[in-house]
Length: 289
Image 1: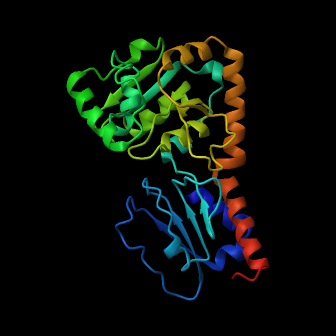
Image 2: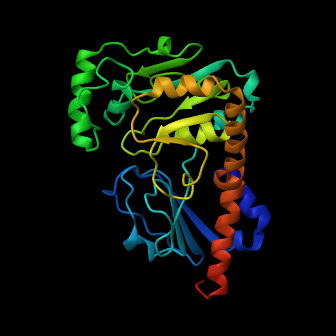
């Protein structure tokens, strides 16, 4: 967020100084959005709500709302999509050329119910049941069965030269610096669903570092639509897809280049600052201030 605000202030200092920003971290809609007081025009940036709540009622209190976990294709009223923010360690990691990366594949993350499909695709249970686990309650039930029946959490052996493992909980795996180092050294990043949402911070972190990303079918918002992310409706066949990609260094290098360009043009702090300024300047021209 610091880079976003610095880019905003540098590109449009007068507009920046005329606004008051509220950054909200709420994971559910069961908390009342606080109301700011004061004379400045107010902008809300809502970062943490995997429930993808659309704050139509609250939006009238703000000049604009920018919200992560956005399921729609475009804005609604004055509510606009905003990317998920990664860790400082990933932000400071150096981007390596694809041919210098040592890890063929990488995933390290929590074994949660939302990743039941991903987990079972790596086990003998991948064809049971023979359908996608779309409803969260169904994923929760199947997750309970899986974690009881399958004690294995390390699957690196399925991916030569890779590192694929599940942890027992959020932030119970690699230290942030080690995670960032491994991700920067990765050719293919597996980015399964987040804790409740399909969206996950690791996908944006992998974008920033130019990894080739494989993930689920994502919402049609501007950060994923037409992006280089390889989006799959099912995790079945993931081993074959990875092997196919690794067998084509030229294709990996091309996707790597496209991903870095996408990050810079669409998802980076600089890109988001420019889009935010453009929208707010348009509001000013219409007299919406």
